Length: 252
Ligand SMILES: Nc1ncnc2c1ncn2[C@@H]1O[C@H](COP(=O)(O)OP(=O)(O)OP(=O)(O)O)[C@@H](O)[C@H]1O
Ligand SMILES: [Mg+2]
Image (cartoon, protein in one colour):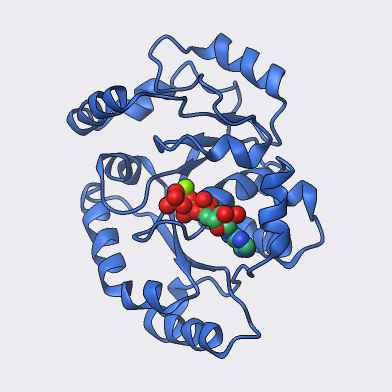
């Protein structure tokens, strides 16, 4: 089983949206499961799950049969493991647990994942935190999501530092890393300039495909579907097919 983690320094750049849609697209080729490893518990919203679904991996009593039951009841666009609704106190406690046990997620997923799972697409909170640290340790590939804006560009050096810090936790083993621009608006000169500047700075670490700013992505959430189902012919979804192909090749 392979694992890809989506990370970014800045919040709100589209990690969760992309994690959901990428898992959905990649599921056409390999058995994929999306994992919500972010206490915000929002991944399910992109997969057709009602707001406030309480069950998930943050609850120690939630096990494999519960997940099978949940997936059967909710029929998400792609199999996924929700984080679950947790109180502030529960999140604080779990944060400490995760910090002290670098293998927490691996152990937690054992016996929880649908049988035959081949690829895990793991969503994380923005920035450096115990959740992203832990995921970086397990990931065979890391997809760094960048906004097509001046803020993401200004933070590129810090993003590189974040990646280096995360990589340091996985001494000795190789891992694929790709940077992906999201919300590109090719009509705007600034958006085009930022893409060119990222290209110069990152070279072939920047995926040649960028995902466009697309109204249908927001509409899809409102319709409780991935964009893959809601707007299969959008540029966003066409781009995701290319990201999926990059990922499968990177993991081969
Ligand atoms: N390509 C896109 N076109 C239009 N809207 C987008 C696109 N990608 C993401 N969005 C919108 O941007 C918002 C933030 O997306 P998302 O929650 O996926 O970001 P995130 O990086 O996971 O945020 P957070 O840091 O809060 O976890 C959402 O409203 C989503 O619908
Ligand atoms: Mg998110």
